[in-house]
Image 1: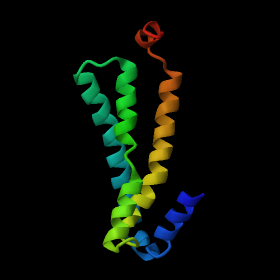
Image 2 (image 1 turned 90 degrees about the horizontal axis):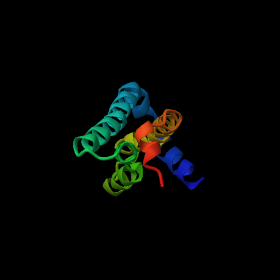
Image 3 (image 1 turned 120 degrees about the vertical axis):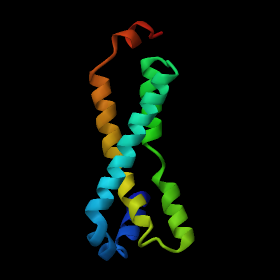
Image 4 (image 1 turned 180 degrees about the vertical axis):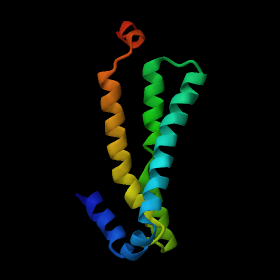
Length: 117
């Protein structure tokens, strides 16, 4: 509840800026988020980690903390402009992370099932 109130506080003063750059900002946030999943998974595969660990690294890298960006924007006094990216990143990372986890949950890896303890 507090998080949602904080996001609304960020977006309300920056409504004009969000209307100007909203579409481009959403695309940039999605690219950053999806790039994190891809790079995290690829790096883990490069180090020959088990599939379950690769998926864990991908989720961890893709779900970077938007709260830090909000705090930095607040400290800079630019919450209404710089804070917009963080305000959009929070909900987007939760949606994409949930979708990816659900998809991976439905498509289990045979190698990881044989390694379960």
